[in-house]
Image 1 (tube, rainbow, N blue to C red):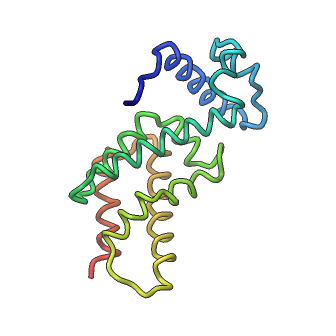
Image 2: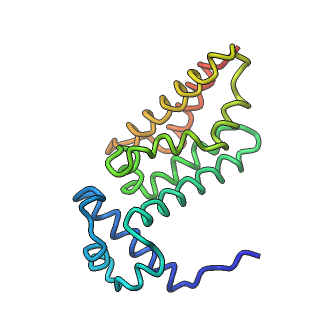
Length: 181
């Protein structure tokens, strides 16, 4: 049985994550010291080191949480209705500052690759696309995934953006147009 994390630990981690997100708007992760991060979060350095070994480990924890929750939403879309796309967009919109930092590659240039190497995304794509020539699969996957990534990136960076539902409909419609037989 999975044990719940102590509320104080959860709160401390949230404060550190919020502080890192704020600091990443000002400078890149290589120029953020643990001392500055702890001061911003109002957390003792010893406490920081109980949970993380570095600012990179904290960032990785934040990315992993985002990717895990994204995978869960895709997995829950059992009827392939595209409702997972809407849920993911709404989730991204709730944490828009951090997601913008990641999506715009200001923080981790490897993040797009982390998203697209997720098994759940590859499997979801395989279920929805028609049979193709062996050589085409890799190219089609990259075209669709990076195209959707760029759409989400543009959408997140707009001040007056469509609702998550409207954007999900656009993405699903484009996917259907590309893969209708």
